[in-house]
Length: 74
Image: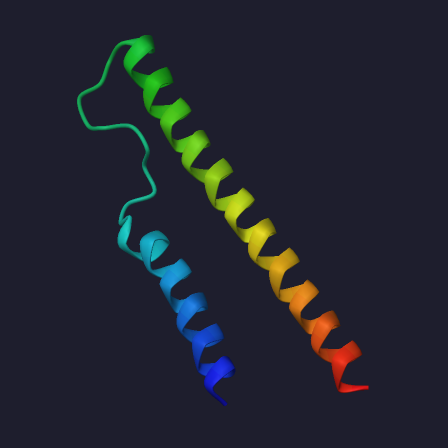
């Protein structure tokens, strides 16, 4: 029961930053130059890439834990 609560807490903690980001527009209002827009796009792409890597690591860890739990239970 305790591990299920920890897993739920971890999932909620990982989803909170994406919920708090607010607007989906990644370009600040009033930016007109190409360099400013490309810098904003690059920042957003790197943030999403970090989230993808974090989710992949989480999936691998949870999957490995589930396999280990199943093998030890036997």
